[in-house]
Length: 391
Image (cartoon, rainbow, N blue to C red):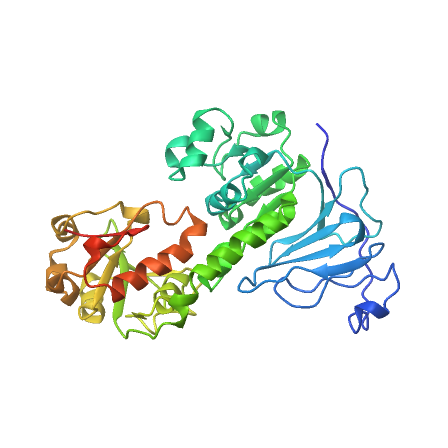
């Protein structure tokens, strides 16, 4: 197999004054990379810096462009990837933390489910050869059909990949979620085989649209920047009216009941709570465990949940883990204590669709759904994309 990942042994020199003015630097100067999300460009020895990608919300990655088609993608805590144009070579003296990836990238092993919808929106399913999710695990119709047709093959989940299949398919990039850090030996093995491993961190974006903006990173990887920019511009344009509307002051609880009977709720700084606020609502838990750990959720007993959320104007049941609900009786089957909630008595109980958390590009539409829920009296006459009201 032709390996596309090359690791240079030399470290690039650190020049303390190199970032003062890009234009004043002669070709060949090298500096340490800025963290992804910062505004300073990364200057690489042997390459002439041209410009950097403009980002509105995302702060977990950055992209720098150089003359002759070279591109550097930097991901916070996950490394840097130099994309080398077809037929060209990587410059000498790159830092050991830079993984060289030769273009075109067209045999991807996609393990991070949140990225699939972004590839679909770029009309780039053809670039994915292998999936870390089997056919019945996809709620994205295009992905499911591609696997049913044999265009995308199941190559094992993140912790148990089918290395033989991955190698036989000529995989040139593995896109993993941060779950790969639970099995670091898998990441190391893939890299030993010469397969670059890009760890996707869109889930660490605090702004919901920061997650969607990751489409620009994949656009850069695939040479589809114009398509990515156009898509994101359309998404943000559709939300202008929602963002300009006054806050309704109505409170919302977002949760599900886990297998132990506890309520699993999102933390105050989580992107779901941000969606509620952007939609014109107020997340009922305004100071819930933002800095305790890296997890985005907290478990609490039903008694604790009742004490804090019983007066919420609306409650939204999260179906991602527990499955969709359609009736109030199904909800009460989770806990009879829910009958005492104000939102239940007022008939303001909703449930998300299971497709929401795989469809990264749908977060803007979800914000619209929540806004409509908060501002529309007759929901029966309104079409919702990712939510439905319990009967």
